[in-house]
Length: 339
Image (tube, rainbow, N blue to C red; front, side, top):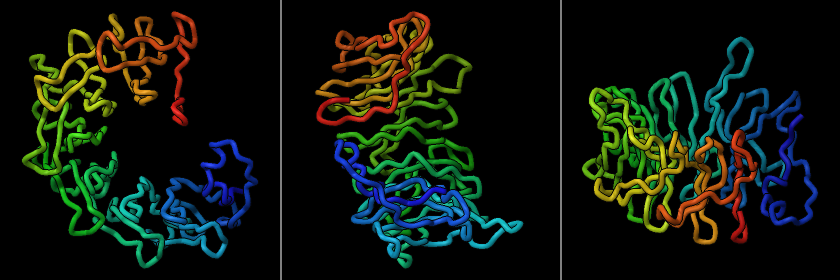
């Protein structure tokens, strides 16, 4: 059976190669797997989701001791056919001395916060049944995300950790229709960049300063007549004062693009794959260079590097030296200027 062990509180020791012997903290579910997940550090405590077989999957807290490991709130109480109901809490994010997270009840998905105490675990906002709350990022003192209140559809929201400060930023696709604001990226210009669909241009590049008036489409990259699905820009990444992303146009397909937040400043950086989609993704910064995954002319996923210019963007290493298969590198972690 799965038990909570104190090693989750000291992952930095493991990463740095120090010797540490895991210790059992508490047997949360004496009948089986506790399903411990979504661990987030909050001060000297850890907030996580777990199932004790009595209350279902709910938010828990631990200070590394058995006595200090307990259920924070049975958000979805009761049972169905003798099986405990679960809120399936998730999307935990550490923010301003609290943890923001989502939970489900028969009323729908809701936004919650906790300070690591039972009394401090409270609901911020009740969203609609079937609402998808996700794409969380922290930006300029607020947490931004997408959600559906049942009135404006799946749109861009923000919260300052209070009920009164949890508000819709803009109804991008007016009415009950959805804009599906996603791939949110915080940038040094004080704005966030993301993909959204206003119902007219399809899924395109958008920017927001956190106000309705300051939330606008940057560029309609796919203007092909009778095609309204959009260019679906993805994987936004802030590097050296510029936003880089995977962008699509009918001529070059999906390649590496960049934007400064203006239509004129949104340009193609490099045609990575001259015969098909380049699929740039998983961006990281290592020693001042942007390193990412992309598919070159043979359609193989390998490591690429860029200084932000077309001439400075190239294949870093063909790890699986082959024209028919790729190494598909993943699970990147940066430490001491090495990835």
